[in-house]
Image (tube, rainbow, N blue to C red; front, side, top):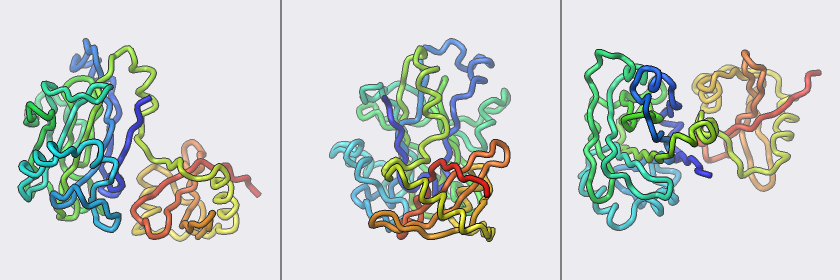
Length: 294
């Protein structure tokens, strides 16, 4: 099974994976596709320094990403390309992790839907290093954006029947480089694998089974809701299409302390407990809950 991994800053910077869209096939853009492409990993780097994995440094690189993708050779290549300028790095791999060096990746500014405009001519082909398989695209100053207000201007995807990523750019005027890795899979596996990837990774799995029940219990006694769009949890709740249905509250679980809030979808009635571990304010997770009405 292929697992998707997002670096800790992906949601904070408002990068968004756009799932495979059947219009690629119905419009003939990938109607005879023998392969499809899913986003496998997304992570960031601050100021060209892949060695810094401190959670306190905005945009830093996680150890798993450095260990898997930034081997000594790739580190030299990345350093030479970046040269103090932020880039987007792309890579398309086989299911076994080998680079596909001749697969074209395209980028454009504006929203994802522009890819379906027949008269749009603003696509750029990402240059690819023939040895490593990494592609690179320098981010100009016009790519700057404020994640609290908007997404970045760039969309990127391999040509063909592939997932896109939207909202790439230079968040908060920082020297952030972004790495995006796709995996190529046979079209015969499309119906099996693709639904498991839709929506990206948003739930944490490294918590005890009874944590959701404890969050639900705490939500019952914190019914007063104060709407605060500046709060990290509420920003994530609203982004996911939910609304808060409890106040924020603190909860201890094991040796850890969390800030949490219950939210509900007005369309489906689904309830989730969103939570942040104290001192890790950029990492918002959620668990499904079933809170009984009283």
